[in-house]
Length: 393
Ligand code: LMR
Image (tube, rainbow, N blue to C red; front, side, top):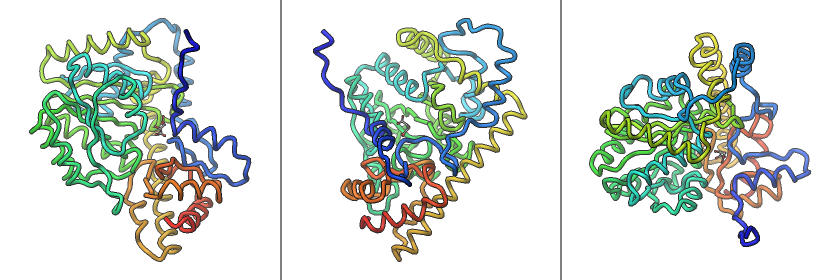
């Protein structure tokens, strides 16, 4: 039977990780997978995470099962970090296996509630969104998102695309730090997105994987909170991988905001059921780190300070790269890099240009020219800028 299996197409982001590892050239630069690296190239364990782990190690006296939804402490702490007090009594939630698990469980929930739902995704979006949708056999369509000339949001086209959604459909949005482009709607444009959802009756599903990496912890949640206040039903898939730097702990949460208590209870039950069918209990260690930090004033303050350092480091690299490119190319056409937010920017290079940068300069970025800003440091920025100009981008 197992011999009947067909080879699966490799995930292009993860395949690039392998290619980079195998490259023996000195000075190679990894701008592929979305993992934060400090200026020395290390993905550090954050101070507050270490302290929380110690606290847990000292005080934890059992590793017995928690609950199908995970612990209440974790879910409450996450609801307040993401929603800041908005929609408090409308939230059903479950802990998930990372942000990817939250996306998958959210889509399963949609399928249970409305098997005919069409999922509307931005063009482009995180490749794994599409991969999961295809694997599930879920109907989806793309709405325009990125303007390759300005490297900003093609907002009019986006709005027109969103207008095609119908009641019972789901619109998948990136709450901040759009992956892969780095281009994000303005506050005014988010208002128009909410108005479009109100008009069509489609349900927003917000992927929030980079809260704190763009304009700040609260600023990055502003669009999500506004939508949560205005729309009767909202799904939120949030990840702690990036902002707590606990990638391998697989810590995420799925929240369903509902219009009434009955729907909240049904959603809570359905989401717990989905966890049971998939992996029973969500992982606890990462969730416990997060709730330990968020419920301790000193740990929370230290975590926020370190997260802010990470954010400002990435912003500094953006400015440096934009300036370097301005002087090397003699144009301002790369200024968008400083305006983009989050870990990624889509450069707008062709696949040939991306391949050339890899061959000539050992610079690894995803084939659609998404680069991970956090993979850079002060010394590699000029190397990248030169390679971009030499490749004729
Ligand atoms: C990315 O987009 O690089 C990250 O979200 C990591 C992943 O799982 O793809």
